[in-house]
Image 1 (cartoon, rainbow, N blue to C red):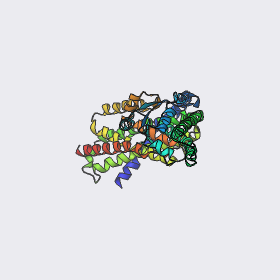
Image 2 (image 1 turned 135 degrees about the vertical axis):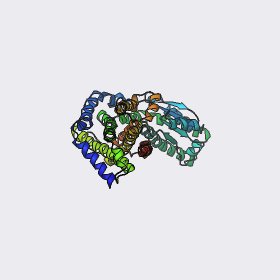
Image 3 (image 1 turned 90 degrees about the vertical axis):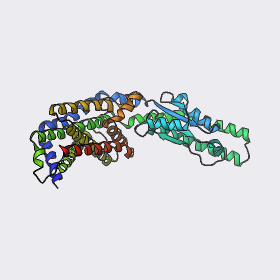
Image 4 (image 1 turned 180 degrees about the vertical axis):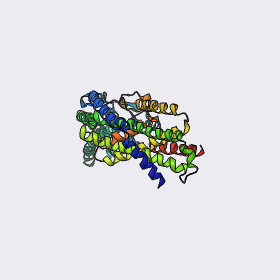
Length: 391
């Protein structure tokens, strides 16, 4: 119960802080309006789908494997993605490392099963930490499969009627490939509309939300600094309140401030700018709580490890700016070169931004995106608890 009272005290103190509210609420709303308007052209459908690197693994080596290769390597899609042929092991390694957006694997025996009218299936590996390329890859293969099903029906009818020998079957396979090529303009048009799934206002709402939740962590730092200056830690030894209860109270207090700030931003952007938070806004709330856990843990760990007050209050804002610049809060992640996209993953901004934009685009939240945030928060809280209780 004492932990709860400390949490409520810090939350009320944040609400009563006029300058703090100006920073945590008004400033992000202003920046969202400025950035959302200034960079709207970069998110317009006319800009086309961003370019991705896909891997193709052809373990079949037959006619239909060649059809898949021709489909993916078509000039029609040349401005949307590039295709790299490799092995299954290499493709999986590069996708997991974030070097490739997706990999399509044509299994052995694909052509034989296709000609026999048996169910066939392509394997798709995607980098789920990206929020557009998995949707593009899934839509691409879905359209491909639909066209393939119609072609397979024609092949099965020819075989069952005794109208086709081996050479004619090969010709039918090539005909299926030609039919697939005929559908490419329509498929490209559908894929090009993916850019409209997120607007500049949505992106920068998510970007500013994660950046300014980091600023909310400064409340925890300031509170710890004040407690240290007032010798509260030393008085705890003579009080019924343990230091671990104090740390946990501060932890939940920062989480509460972050979450309250997010709710205000969520409602403010919804009614001021018409920003859509997707069909499941409760998932966005879960993301905010997870991000708050990371912010709170990092804030408390910083205060526990850095004893000099001036150094502590100088390091945190610098860290916010670096994390925001690398994590996509200032420049869209899609504009980063591949190497910088890998570097971005060390920042909490990256994971929070990926999760928020995924929810905004109407996708089911990939809960794995929250694990780095929760992991950082729990580990940092553990370090802070051990360190502070030994002071």
